[in-house]
Image 1: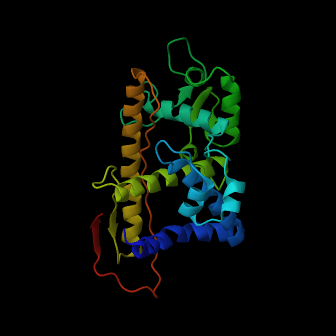
Image 2: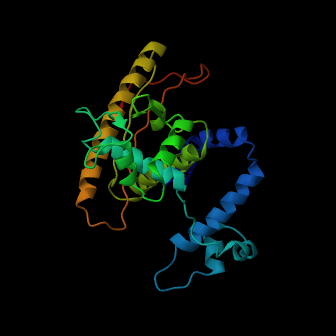
Image 3: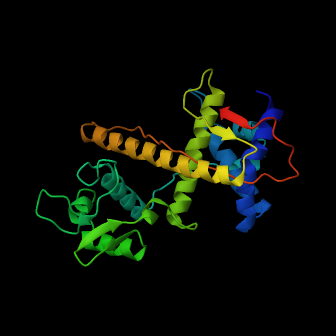
Length: 277
């Protein structure tokens, strides 16, 4: 693989991340500390030779980090991305509300649910209890109301708000998905680059040289299409899990939409159509 071309691609990938780091006050030396530890960790756990013990010397050779530093940093264990308990609970309840045919309309939109209902009938209480018995449904509802994820009206009916689908403003939930989703997107692209033939679907439709009005219209339409695809996939996954024996595999299906105004200093595009790539 041409390392020069790879480095050029990395610059483009890392630029928005560096912009975020500078904005949040994470300095270059602080990032170096993180990368040094990560390089050692990856070399230690992901590049072990079959039947051989990983040594400080080999980790040093793979990473270019001095053996003394390798010895200090090794043994921390593979990094674990723990899901915050409240996030895991909220995500699972939302996923079931959006997937269960008893709690959605014909188009897959979430129906308002009575807070309580007779046994066997859909309700917010039954929905929460299908996910967890560790918390009272009312406590979950109060948390959601406080976070403006749902409302409770005078008829004791719970309505899910649009805000529930979009993590807000750098909170714990948004930062968790920031790490998880970017990891999986990059991991799928890396797997495709590393393999003889692409294993994962990792494509995009892109057009340059557009007016602001057309870009905004395309953004709105692509958001609708993306939500339709996510809703359908969530429902299929929910139905499949009902009879699945379970195992150690995980699956993630994500989409993204992005528009920006290109700087006038940038060279003009070679052509407006970008197509599928």
